Image (tube, rainbow, N blue to C red; front, side):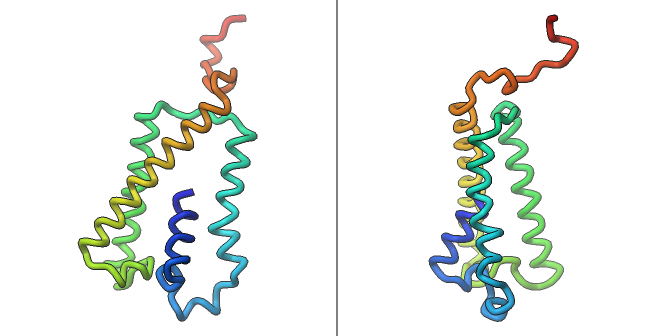
Length: 140
């Protein structure tokens, strides 16, 4: 969800923020929709149709932040090793603004996690399979 919202927000502001000018003719329009629009629809459909057992919010938040920092590592590794930013928008930002952009993105990602967790709880509540118990703890 975060990737889709960020991509289309930046794309609407300036397509060159997410797709360099030299790559525009190489990437078909439908490809952007498959990779950046379809996930939103499938995520919402999956949330409505499937009850997911999720960890508690503390554990979920730790996982979200861990994955986010791992992704930041990828972004900065590409910059260090290959000498260019993974996303062209960073070419237009100062170091301070890159920090603000990435920090804001991390916070937005975390809020989207909280919203998704809340939506799952609201839709599924105390569904029997929302809180599985180990086989040894079940009573016959």
